[in-house]
Length: 307
Image 1 (cartoon, helix red, strand yellow):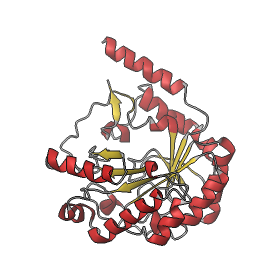
Image 2 (cartoon, rainbow, N blue to C red):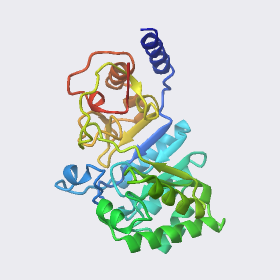
Image 3 (cartoon, one colour):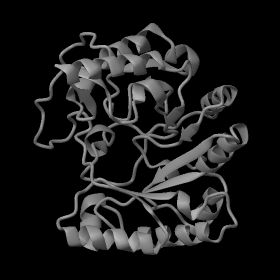
Image 4 (cartoon, rainbow, N blue to C red):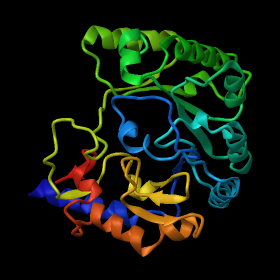
């Protein structure tokens, strides 16, 4: 009982401290992805839909608004492979030029991270996540999980790391991280993977954490309590805004089906949507215990904080 009361108070205090503009924007400029990761819902959600790209006008509008509010981080990825946007380098440079004090971030599976792209990207970003699902030390597992050519992506990643190591670019080796959501079969395989990357100078390793993406994938758990008081994933309703290529602002990085659209940036601004009654309603449902429909996205999500 006491623990539950404390959790409710903590959630209420967090909600009260929500700023008038998000600290982080996460946006995708294209809906395309060329991987077939078994830990990702992309194949069931996006492959039957036409690939779309963000217009230059909308992208500039979004980045310009961020510059007026001193946003902390701009992440140019969401449900996609950002390097499939042929304008991505140009867009990274624009984001950095307009927001020199912000951290520009990207996540890539490295399949298109050629030497030329590596050089251009290392000058344009502050932080890069390399998505290596299944691990780099197991060729068969990697290709089974990601559906990409191991030799090609391995070569690209090693070249990119060497580019960052030179110290001649904006990106530093300390600002490259590895993401792998697939659990390793044994402790020995985990340690081998860890040793491989640390030997390359990469110390930020995000292993494990396989997600159902709010029920899109079967993890064997689906009977979650609806008594929620927050989000354990960096408190996203209080800190992050998520934008897809057509300008829709969606609830979060778990909203693959875009079932909770909070507005559209072709018609409005980040500030107005972030401070809208619709967004406040979401915050009240997630943090203050306001009743939501039975199929509310956060009720199905393992990242919700439960009492």
